[in-house]
Amino acid sequence: MLLIKNARLLENGTPVTRHIYVANGKIKKFLRPSDKKSVNADKVIDAKNNYVLPGLIDAHVHFREPGMVHKEDFLSGSKAAAAGGVTTFIEMPNTKPPTLTVKELHEKRMLAKKSIVDYGFHFGSSTDNLSEIKKVWQNEHNRIASTKVFMNISTGKMLIEDDVLLKKIFSASKMITVHAEGKKIEKAVEMSNCANRKLHLLHISLASEMDFIKKTKKASKYTVEVTPHHLFLTERFVKDRKNLKAIGKMFPSLKTQKDRMALWNGIYKGFVDTIGTDHAPHTIEEKSVDFDKAPGGVPGIETMLPLLLDQVNKCNLTLTQTVNLTSTNPAKIFGIKNKGSMSVGHDADLVIVDLKKTKKVKNEELFTKCKWSPFDGLSLKGWPITTIVRGNVVFDGENVICDKLISKNKNHRGGEIEFNH
Ligand code: DOR
Ligand code: ZN
Image (spheres, helix red, strand yellow):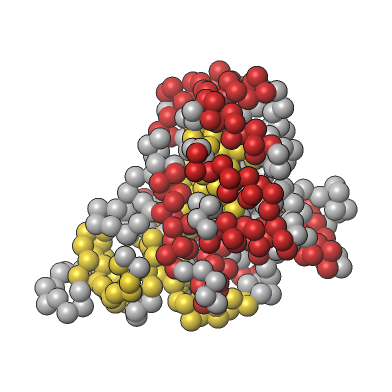
């Protein structure tokens, strides 16, 4: 039994202090500090009246394994997740090879066992894997989050431009996540409406896209993701850099201040459902070539929560909005059972945050293998100080705790999650 005492929680939006009891990796009960009942605990963590939030669920990461493990792998990526308060991630299929067959999915599953936080997978689509898409949704629909469809060019060779095939892919899938930009989001929405399928629009970056979303979202079945880099950076980030401009290259690209403000407005008005990091590490060497030749993508899983907590401190966002966007809504959208909120019976995936801690993002302190962040040098107020996955501490504010735990007890590994679509 684990006891997290003096935890500040939001109860219907109101802060309260509770002791949280965790048994067998699940939240067992909440007691008031005034309750005299004592419960034997083997381990006690004093949250010291800091907020305890449900662990973040990052439904959009590229952890590069197999095939590009010089940039990231499931262990390094999951360490970065733990340091960022992320207790579950869902991995994208544009690896080498890409996850386009059931066999490749099974192989990736074996590789992911090294993860120290929980995980799941999106399945890939290409011009020639329709039969595999059908097979995976027939045989293991609860073990994939979505079919990921690239309707715009990006890292990897997974672009699909044939509308007839796109329609077949949408029909064969219970849920689709799509990389579509500009007008193409309209096509994706139309196709999901026709096929009557759930659609999650990834990394919305334009004011014009947000306008379309505001007009159509109520009548449709789709949900919307934005990324931290589009919320916090604009094209100026690239223009102002003297060297290594490609640090600011990603797909979709960074946009104008007007676009950035439209995304925040979408959050305030309730049109944005999730924030996903699109954590897409590339090495500094790979980024050190001409802008046009450099790969697109930025790491982000370690900095999402401090960036958002800093906004909470600045009164630009509430803690409740933060939790909904990064945990509760991803769990609902992908049908992840027992996660996404702090309820009795749910997995004890928790992050203790110190809203007063001020610290700079520093490249050298990051756990991602690529060891850089577009936010390097930025001072932020509000940091995760303890991350807990199913009752196991995986990050203590400075160190990722895995090697010792893993050798002692296999259960300290992350595990694969299931999806109820
Ligand atoms: O910037 C991006 N990088 N966008 C994507 O869609 C893919 C990602 C990557 O894998 O590098
Ligand atoms: Zn992505």
